[in-house]
Image 1: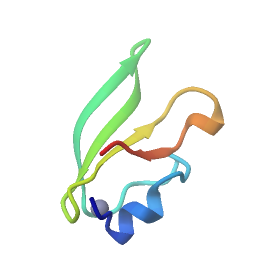
Image 2 (image 1 turned 180 degrees about the vertical axis):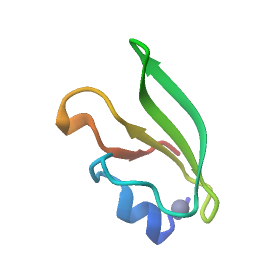
Image 3 (image 1 turned 90 degrees about the horizontal axis):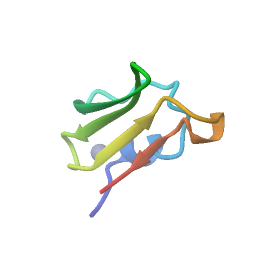
Image 4 (image 1 turned 135 degrees about the vertical axis):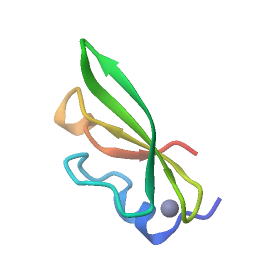
Length: 66
Ligand SMILES: [Zn+2]
């Protein structure tokens, strides 16, 4: 699947960055009562992106799932 520019730009970047305008929040996962992970669907290219908000700083990044 081809990722759009917005997704390519986000992948591997810090999750402190907000998603681009094409991202729709589709689900969250919690850890100890706090939001630990957010799942987004990109409306432009259809990619499923994960924004990890917990763990070591090296893990708190944006990742493409599919
Ligand atoms: Zn995209």
